[in-house]
Image 1 (spheres, protein in one colour):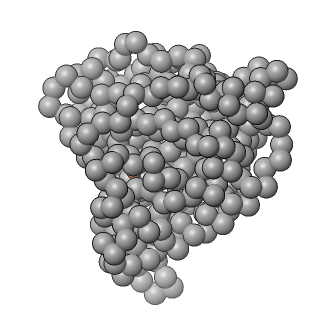
Image 2: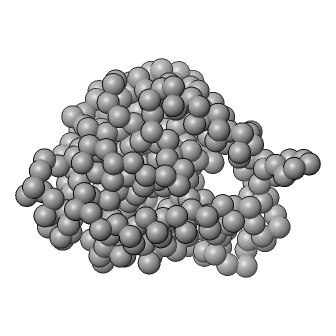
Length: 307
Ligand SMILES: [Fe+2]
Ligand SMILES: [Fe+2]
């Protein structure tokens, strides 16, 4: 696995927001730049084996564009890198899945898109209703929406889901009966109510079981790529977030999966800082978010990783 293109330039709108008033880093101090990706190949046996057998797949990775937060979303029109699959790990356009999927369709320009629904796609909506709406729209657009689902495409096996979190990393700071604070509702047979931390943990549990079976059961030579919005490991979090309520909102400890060595690559979003983590089994966890109003100055709009 290697970075094959890392943009040396940015579109005007990316540069504009980096240069002026939009450094609203929700987690403050920044992580080191994406480094060491090339070394991942040699340290991942299945990936190295795969390289000898066939051409690597080029994945264009991005997340958290939050196009609802900029005055002229159409101005974000990056030059397309050389890629096989666009992987969008969510938070593309808050509360407007139609525009979000339309944007991704234009961005990919006929190439495949793998996408996961996430908290801001559900924003001001109902968990079940919005997912079905997104499935319908994605189906019409030819976008591959993964929610506890998998697809083999362009020489990779993609497994995807929102993931949510179990809030365990927040410790006693998260009361399971409280709403998550996100403007999302859930429905039972009689009414709808705010999405609570308990709802979030229950939804996470379903995905966790699914991912466990898919990842630990993966025995193909086709590289496994996991796509989730929420982060799968404590190490994905900036230091000062750890032990806070935000830690529980952003990540869960899925180290039994991230350290199993089964996945070549795990892509996440939600945390508005770039990160690249190498787990002991060889799995790389990469996050390449733009952030609200393009707050992440290390966002690489042309980040392509080979798997
Ligand atoms: Fe986000
Ligand atoms: Fe998010």
